Structures are given as C-alpha cells and as structure tokens.
Amino acid sequence: MMETRTQLITRLEREIRAVERILDRRGMYVDMIDWTAMTARERDWARYRHMEELHMTIWELDSRLDHLDENRWSYE
Image 1 (tube, rainbow, N blue to C red):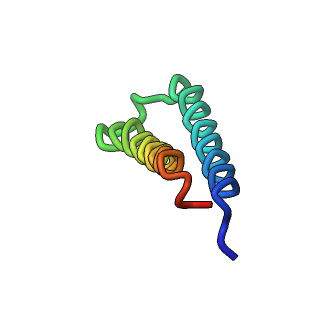
Image 2 (cartoon, helix red, strand yellow):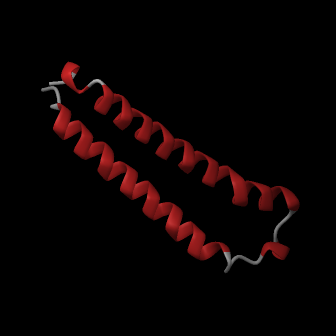
C-alpha cells in the first residue's frame, strides 16, 4: 500500500526531528571529548565525517519535503 502525501510528510518530519536530536546530542558531547588522546586522523574523522553525513541526511529529507510541498497536487 502506498503512503498518502500526508503520511509521507509526517514520516519525513519525524525522521528530520530524529536526526536533529542526534546532532544536538553530538554537539553536547563534543566538548567532553579528549581530542589530545586521538591521532590527527581520528580527530578529523570524529569532527567532520559523521556530522557531514547527518547534515546531508537532513538536507535530503528537507529537500524531499519541499518537493512534496511544491508539487502537492501530484501526490494526492
């Protein structure tokens, strides 16, 4: 069974909120990390890799919501 537009938007909004909560938690813990105990490579990976992936996920979900909103008549 195919999701209705409203169900899809609701699901995507839930996913966005979940990813935003993850980003908030990562931000809280970033100050607690002992960066000196890591190699430069580990620091770079920890600081940028996961944050970039999460930001891309939010961007993709947000973009899909915008697309649904702009083309709402074709999803009903």
